[in-house]
Image (tube, rainbow, N blue to C red; front, side):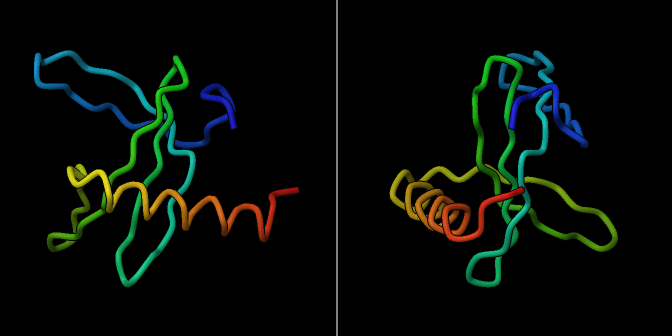
Length: 85
């Protein structure tokens, strides 16, 4: 999926206060956690855990590279097993 093909866009503010837009490429569950895969205009891809607080949802960065790699590997296996039409 390309950035321009996205249905939903989120705006994330970086540590310098700069706002960047990201397309929601995928939302998926793994081990009772919800994850969001976001893609930027320059094809930068970010992975976040989605957390609920009351009726609100927010995203949390995944700092452990091994966990991030494990989640992305599982996602890739799932996509290859059931490709989109």
